[in-house]
Image 1 (cartoon, rainbow, N blue to C red):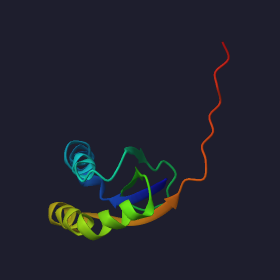
Image 2 (image 1 turned 90 degrees about the horizontal axis):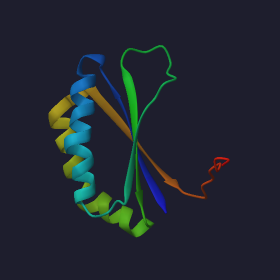
Image 3 (image 1 turned 90 degrees about the vertical axis):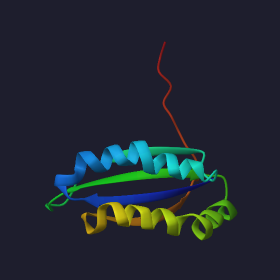
Length: 109
């Protein structure tokens, strides 16, 4: 399984609008491609002393072929949509991660 991580730094003045747009529009558009199984939307809480806020969305996809298909067929259109909506007030970078394993502590009964 691969994780397609998009980290975005946004200007404080658009934070609420951007978060709502991500929830209502962008994340659903990512799922509509049929290439992602889950998404985790997080806010970066420990940042350098810079203006604005950073968020990360991690989308899981089953394999490299599916991710490459997304990158070729869907990513340019979705990137353009975000650029048209927020311009340079929201700047993103992408990281591709390979899931090695997961662990979880079970609660005592």
